[in-house]
Image 1 (tube, rainbow, N blue to C red):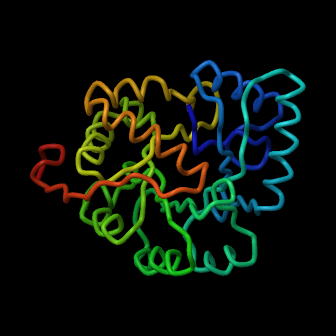
Image 2: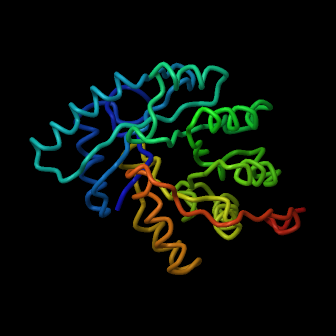
Length: 254
């Protein structure tokens, strides 16, 4: 299993704080059946500024530690960048890390809203030759209230990544329901842990994939699995035609 979103690098954001924490997370990941994980520390999010070169150095150090401890996990370079007006410049000057040095780049929105310039920035990222992946859209309040916003982004070429914990209800029943609606509407393309530790924000990937298979069938299960591999390989991912989530269907409150 491949996990494309994690905060396993030590001491640089709100994830693992020490190498001991990182190794504990690695052991937990392996128990879940994960063999490859992309480290995606926060960038331009509050006080967190983590540039590509520094992430690369720390990934090398962590992989050495994993090898020394005989933990069968391979960590790759990535980054979770909060959307901002300098993204294109930082992509071009090597401050923003794509996922495993591919064309895929994570884009994070503030939890409460979607910036007005988001549509233009997602377009500009694509014009620059990259493919934006919007992380955890199911936890964005404005997208929850207006799912058509996400439809427009996906229809125009963006991809999205769902959090494993959201799909199984760890963020509440409403976010769980919305997460399943995103799968049904072809508005999300990847399942990842966004793990920060081994307790409150763990991996739960096995549980999420079981839920995905139970509720959406083998086709969705294998598609999400394959898409993570395709990201690692830098290949085009599988995507189906997106559908609009009608408000009257959402949470039964419209």
